[in-house]
Length: 390
Image (cartoon, rainbow, N blue to C red; front, side):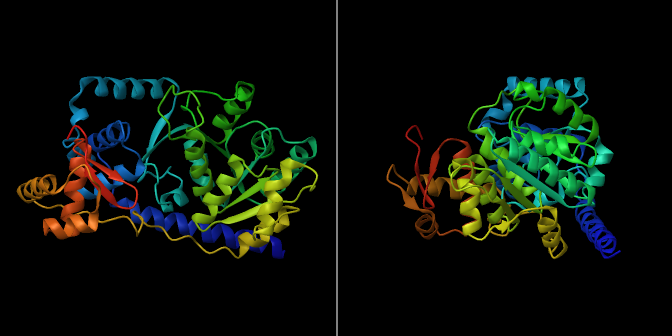
């Protein structure tokens, strides 16, 4: 009776979370032209999530921001976007924008949320998943038989208690987690293009998840997997979940990267202990030493979820600079002052602000435009200098 009551309370709490997020985003419904512009902006060369949100804050819309990008006038860019849109339609996929109901709610809270995701799956079913807790499960690709067995039992028990499982569709623990939660709810987040199945042996599992749950990707259509994409994928797995369970992970592994990101996002980290003699468990044992929640069964996870506070929703990270929308004339004057003040020797942005005698917001806006025009280079330590060909 008490277990049923706690499950119902969690359902009500999470339904309220989704409702509040929907209220927050209702006023920000995107037009078709703005969605197209956002996709084009995000797919532009050298524009990652951080740069995208800086541009959006500086210019208000992606349509305005595109006017500042030299490469935006290249017709080949439009052709690539048109081709990607056509390819997505051909497989029954869709683009999910930050403001959309289908966008994972908790993912909006990370410092660099992707402005658009590719999605393949059952839209209504995945939206219903957001009224429950999502827990991510990661671990070794070369997982032992016992770890795969334990993963299946754990995810099956969590699913039976209304928990949705997210993972990365990799070999080993990921595949076991998805397979055990197919009937109760699972989400796959992949590093490659939404249409690329990797590893190939998980093709049937990929198809099953697309039918019974959902597959998300931040990567453009047709892009094959490569090492640089996996850490970016890992941040999405950690970001969309209330917590991350690590099952069998070496000390140097992608699973520990995911756990680290979960901690940075103020999410729970659970670790399954393993034999000190097995290097595949060294990472999990280390996490437990450092304060991760020792996990031996589903109850260890469920007890923590019952005490979990709602993660507050915000559109932009509080630490991200709020760039001003100054007049074109003012920004042009500041750009010229900046170019006159800079050389090939780096100086700090604070020094530049003092030299130019303009507000920090105006200087940041002008620097953003100069960077996009390849006139200046931003360096570590909040330093800038002239580009060699500037």
